[in-house]
Length: 173
Image (cartoon, rainbow, N blue to C red; front, side, top):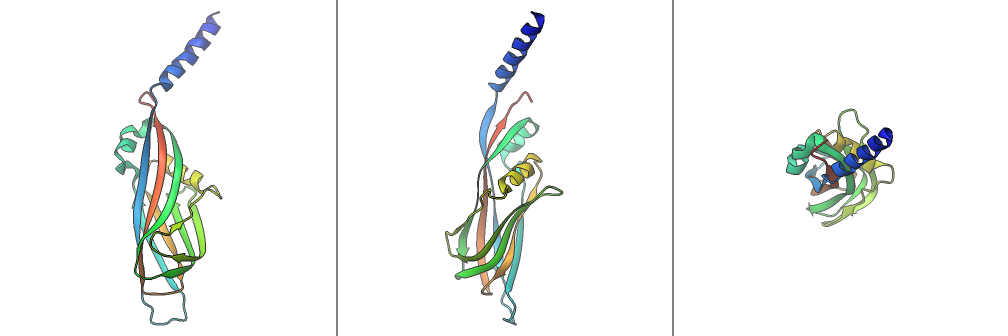
């Protein structure tokens, strides 16, 4: 009887504790201002690389709950061209989200024409969202980068990277 009482009471306490769960959206974003400089020799591809840092602690709710976070669910990861000085084709490109010794999330693109408003697909086809979630679980600043080659030089564009999440925290954790 005593064991049954303890089991029921313990399960009840966990359910009561779960009632205190707090859910909130925590979105993270950065702009990559890519500059593909004018080349003097056109027999080489116009290459570029740009990176930026995102600190999850810059989101006030995320920072407030910190060690109390139980779960982070990735809802969406996307990249949108906000501005560009002329149409360009990315012959090859990679967008990478990385942090320290964790597995990076990498999306590869070939022959993508960039125009204002163009969104580059950043799906979970190779477990990239899982890697982003692991990076966010660490709650440390991480790097977002884009590098590659294009069919033209003397191009400048701004790429907005957005990571949208749903976070569950519990003040009793």
